[in-house]
Structures are given as C-alpha cells and as structure tokens.
Length: 118
Image 1 (cartoon, rainbow, N blue to C red):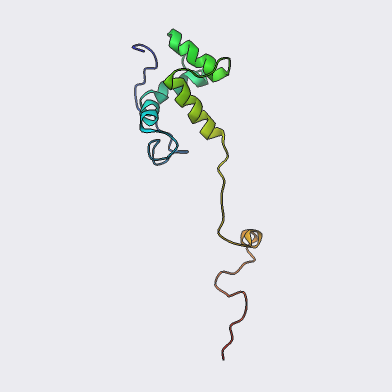
Image 2 (tube, rainbow, N blue to C red):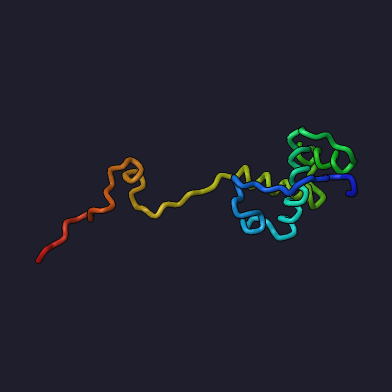
C-alpha cells in the first residue's frame, strides 16, 4: 500500500458527520482514522476523478461497483461509510399532534383546556 490510496489532505464530511467520524458513534477509532487518512483518495477513485494505479486500487473499484465483496479494511470502511450515507435518518418528535404543529394551528402558549379560577 506504499503507492496506493495516497491522499494529500485529510478527509472530512461536514455535511453528514459535522463532529467527525470518531465522534459520530458509527465508526471505531481505527475506521475513523482510515477514513480521515485515505478518504480523499477513496472518494476520488469511487467517483472516477482519479484512475487506479495499483492492483489494490483496482480491487477497491471492483468492490465499489459490487462485482466483489469488500475484503480489505479500506474496502470495508468505505462500504460502511456508503451504507450510512444511503440510510435515511429517522426523526422522532416529542409532540402528540405532529400535524397540527406542522400546519401552524397548534398554540404553544395557550393550555388545551381552560383552567379553573376557583
């Protein structure tokens, strides 16, 4: 892996992982380090911006295209990264009547039922 997966700078995905890969809870420290150190090269290869220069990079491209399963640590962490990006994030609300809050008919400053002033 001397000439393979060479990156000139560290890889960060501020859109999906604003606090970093290690703090996201999705990756181990070792996986986060691999992504940060080699992610630029992996992304360039996967998107076609750079061409493979070694057998390892050709195997990585085959793994990205789905013609072979991920075998190496870099292939596995990139597949995991792509899988996380493809998953939909679930959003949970605290409100009971989500539709009325969304439509703007719910009033937060008024109680649902009048209070007795006895």
